[in-house]
Image (cartoon, rainbow, N blue to C red):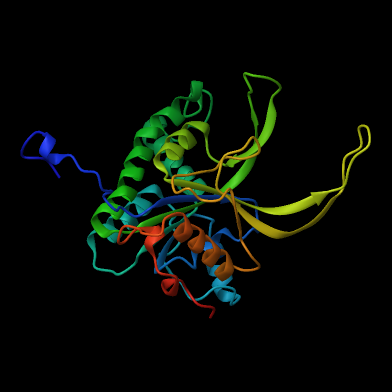
Length: 287
């Protein structure tokens, strides 16, 4: 909304605007990202092309029947779904994007067709990384669309992402590998800045000691953890004072409940409508 008058000291505030949270959850395969998101308050899923795990989980009875758009196969369809959520009547409180990786792929396909005649080669989209740079304008508009759902419809955003292992170029010593969302680094840099919270989900494994050049042997790996703070091993962050680790429990309801309780403990009094202000009894029950 355009201001009719320039800002003045009368506009200065100390309280938060109380906007819902922008959360990114990335994690290894099978750790339960989609199941976790299905337990958010009144969720509606945007399933990008090929990312139909929610359908499978519903059919298998692993999650409750959950509101979702049909599989979104084009960038225009994805943007249209956001517009529908902004403009049409509904009572959804959480937008679950499954996945950021899929959304980025649709964005790049759209830009490649629009600006490079469908040419992915060295004289097209990937020439000197040109396509990835051009696509950032579309991606910014997409993030702006997500933000409008927060401001206009008071919806929390929970975006899921697959993870990959990348090599970090360490200016202070040896390079090392770490888990990061499986996005182009330009896309991820923009999205990481946009998010209020980046969680990394993984299984915890115990590794026996190793001798010489021999590798240790991993054991366990059934316990799941949400990591909230960046380390050398993975990307994560939060602006809520969360503990560095949150036990994700044995199932999605337990994982969501533990996450909610950690948010509530970190901030006892929350702005109305924010994701950390959701009441525990508004989370989903087992079907």
